[in-house]
Length: 154
Image 1 (tube, one colour):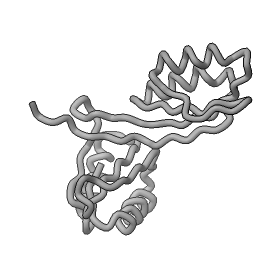
Image 2: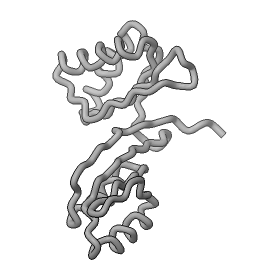
Image 3: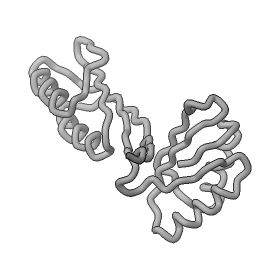
């Protein structure tokens, strides 16, 4: 994760850095912070520790990057959101409702043949819910990518 001014320009530089060096971005999520002058961008990548260290060093050298933090480990709270459009035929509606309740998700749109469900939590939670819903017919899916914040010191 990094903090930066001039969100669009720096996002372009970051993705260029990743692409130019052959690093893979699994997810990227950028948003404003409490300070309107800054954006927080969370990038998920799978890479060996030594390569991650290289990425972090290269990110720190970019102009307008204020801070870079490795958010792996337990000191960070990580969450993702997914919006899932699922086929909801009458025979499956009770089972879908049970799954939604189990995962503390919610229905945000209902149609005669579909539900649109919103769920947030750890990546593993999202994937587990999707595995249970898959037999019913996932029609569409949008995932936010991972967002993360470090826990505050007590």
